[in-house]
Length: 77
Image (cartoon, rainbow, N blue to C red; front, top):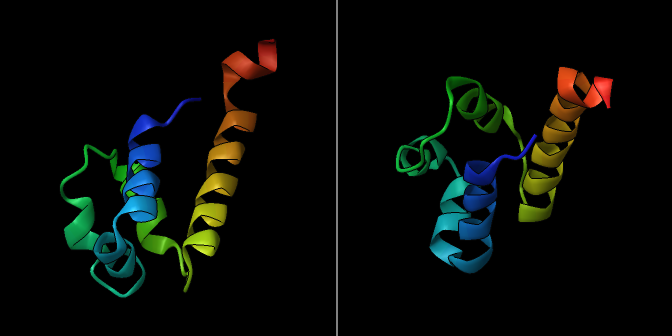
């Protein structure tokens, strides 16, 4: 399962110091409003507790991998 919008969120955090700081310090909801995230993706990101980009991205990646495991298309492959 490909998540281009989630990759865009992480990509912005990598290249934009202010975005990264806001993502980690409580301004996440405001920053996420500019992305076309599904309600589930928004909830997952809002529930992440991280004090570094590495931790944030790691938790998000684990969720994405969990989604791939549950994907019916991948189970048939």
